Length: 299
Image: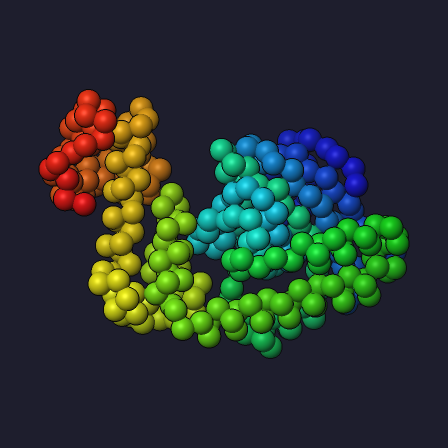
């Protein structure tokens, strides 16, 4: 695989790119639409805090697996927080951007391919909607894909073994979704998702699509298990994170509000005072002078 660092990559479906990657390009001897599967490119993204890609409309399927570190994906208006062993699948036509975490940039494997049959497969197994599959390790599948470069650089020579690997991954996706949806501990899974989403936008609509359950069912099951709504639980998590920032960093209230995805600094300050009895400025002064002890705190 060749290694490059460029900021003007002329890829037909990428509107912006930054980062350090290793890639392998495969080309068909004939028109790609003559093959049931056409691999455009596959590669490895090395940890890079500046890694960023934006696609106004993807022209192919993009399958990516996070090996280590953290990152973020926004696809068709929904934002996901990504970590090790997470897999995601971008579909043709998706508007998306994805980038590594500045403090813990991810390493990931990826492959871009075209296949009309793959789209039909996903539709047949009700997999047209999910984009992110948490805790799903497909590293061995990618190792098999990387071995394809030892066969040929032409799609005509590799599309059969590539098809075997990618359809095996597709079946794993189906099994993974079935396992997630059949798990009875919906509340626990929602709780875990909220705990990992403090610094990214998250809505009931996003939870609904991730866990394949209605919003009312999510709220009902969560409140039954924990005596609180998912929204109230998330606010408590954000307030606790804000306390830590105020006590241990020099971040301003506006910076904390932005990081924790409050609509404004005023909104953050209002909720913070309602929950703790202090304004952010008061809490910082008291906590830093007393080593974190605030007797007036409500939470």
